[in-house]
Image: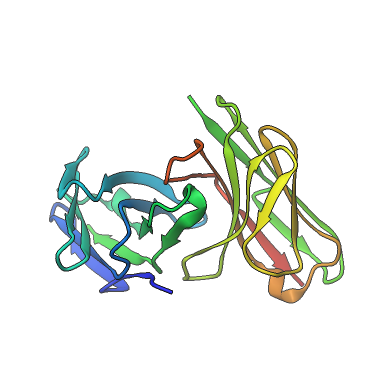
Length: 114
Length: 112
């Protein structure tokens, strides 16, 4: 089946820099995407979502960009802080059901250096 | 606001022993409920989901079962644990039809 994948398994940045975490998806029918943050030993925390009729959505210090032409999703974190260190997952939903149809990527580990 | 509670946080069980993990949701009614398993350094695998009391759908064949005795309660069980059942188990909920999900804090299960 088609899965969400990630370009990089790890990303290391300096505190205060901007971070960009990438995600590639292959299911052109996916119409909803979510970014989750998972700290060590904790459950995934919802960060931001975007529907396929949008190409950009902004939250507090985070921006998600969606490029449907190349099936690419990215999460941008502005002024990265040590508390941003975590594993970040993207997930897609092809819209044929509810949350049971979410497909998760393997995750990117973000390390913020002080 | 809605909250999800999952317990215990950690559990060490011998092979062959039974398992019962509980999850409850507050602040909403008739949620969709989910059990996921996450292997170390990996993504999330959906095990079960439920759209209502007594309604359970299984995504993968396994040594586990799920039950939903009340609207906001979801239980993951096993009669006899295997070593391969070790992992990080996550409960999640969503509104009906909403394509996203919100997760509990997880239970780290180690079968020895």
